[in-house]
Image 1 (tube, helix red, strand yellow):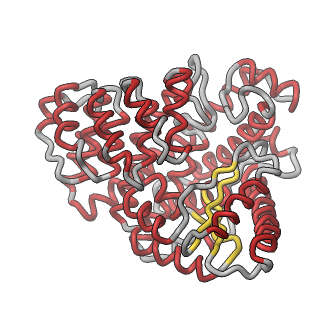
Image 2 (image 1 turned 60 degrees about the vertical axis):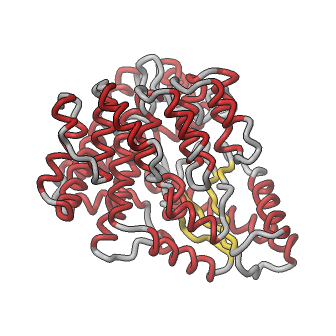
Amino acid sequence: MIDFYKRRLCWGLHRTYKESLEYERVLREVFRKTAMEIYGTTKVESIGVFAYGSPGRFELTGGDADADVLIVEKRRGSRERRFRELFSRRLGNFDFSKIDLPPFGTYEEIDIFLGKSLVEGNQVIETRFICGDPNVRKEVESKIRKFDSVERELRNIFFNRFYFNQYFRQRSQNGHPNVKYCPGGSREFLFFYWYDRLCQKINHEDFSLSGLTQPKIKEGLERVFTEGGITGEEFGRAFEAINALIELRTDILTLNRGSTNRGITILDPETIIGLQKEFRYPSRREVVRAFRKYSGALATVTQRIIEMTMERAANFRGSSWKEDFKEGYAKSTSEKERKRIAVDDPLTRMAVIWGASEAGQKSLFDKLAGKYVDSSDWATICSLVCSPLCEPEILHEVAVNQGKERGYGYILRVIARNKNTRRDTLESIANNPNLEKRYSELATIALAEGFNKANNQV
């Protein structure tokens, strides 16, 4: 199918680069108009606008993209609040699927999220400065250097590998794959970037995205190849797969705009029929076969990345650590053997928690949950509440304790998707007036429409 896509004037990584540049233009124009209205000048001090997520990495997918933008202020007074509100409202005039503007943004808040949260800390680390006060860019980059570390990068890669393994199973529908959320799907582009960032930290290289000039996934793939993680043939297959998956996902998003499936990228028979009508796709059999080929090529490289990350971690922790880590996560490890693995090391602890969960080893999981329910380590807590083995009491305790603290809010979204969560726990999240909407909305949906609906929110 790659020949089918090559007939297009702009496709694949070229498309994402051009879409990202257009997004920059939109942000700059919205900033200019908003700054003039609120401040009477475009030379606004102490405010900076950053792209994060896919536009931050020059990987913005066309068709129906989110507007991922972080506004950073030295402090937030009345004019800063008005600026954020008007900026978001103006951005909403463009046809983005949603405006994803994190509620945090002051220097103090950025310290909190970088210091505590993997997910929202990544939203800061993965930013690319677009416009505003250059001193804000310098301040943000200084804070990233302060809080980011090799250890944080290792936790990020391993936690997300375990998390995605589970999350992908939740995002398929009736056995049909989700082009974004599946093994080898476009969500796994992140591992290419994260591994490159890990290596940059180890090698003391500049890892700021603000000087980026090409899609980050390309740089990550090149890193894996030059380090000998994949062959030239595997590099070629992965590069072809990246370009093809970008086009497939773009077409599905375009197809689903304005429908109840907006933002969803399930590759089911109905979707393929729509692709055939709108874009003259080949037969269903050929489309499915091509998707399996492309996702398989990317899944192979992603697995190599995980193996190379383990090697990197073993360089700091020793070869015995690697064996404990692999045995801790392996589903085939017996409960007796898994219990013997020391969990003082946070990476090994994550592996054992997820391994016990995947293997259905309830006794060991309950013991770990009881021991670490009061932990302040974000990755440990989130690993526990992700599990289908997690008891309702543990979920409730985390929700009403750590979940109320700044920096742990994303964990409430995970709790709201866990089918073991009690109704009173969901109500405590949904009805908390002090929580931002992004932290309470899944609990509200789970209460009204059930856990399956909460699990399939875009």
